Image 1 (tube, one colour):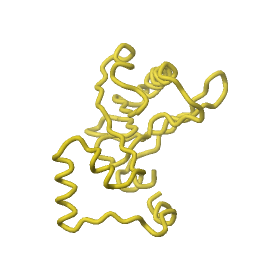
Image 2: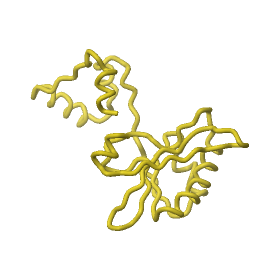
Image 3: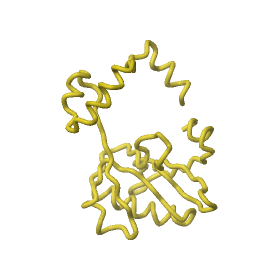
Image 4: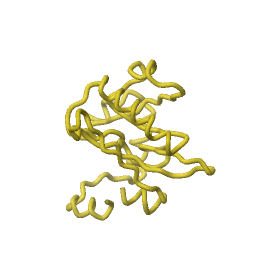
Length: 156
């Protein structure tokens, strides 16, 4: 969050989400202006951040998530002209009948825990494998930091 506030000049926009008077999670986004218009993004193109959106304390099904986003969009659109969010748990087919004027973009998620050779073999596009191998030949190296928590504290 600190990166977006300092580098991009964004203002945090956090909404507590309740169901039957019980806190079930938060919507985490940022408010900013582009060409004079207020926008709330969670995330927005060019931020180099991944998933934000609904951070739930409990498991939510698709119907619950859509219901929350509908109420959230009504609330957020009082403060901005555009609300943009990303939710890995929803697909275009899930939301198409529930929202007007929406633009759906697919996201990509890759589990990085398998061995790197297994990851490379799993890439379906040869161009992706080519780009990675070319980068390696040019000297790009992937290293695991000795003290990851210390590095993370500096970023956050």
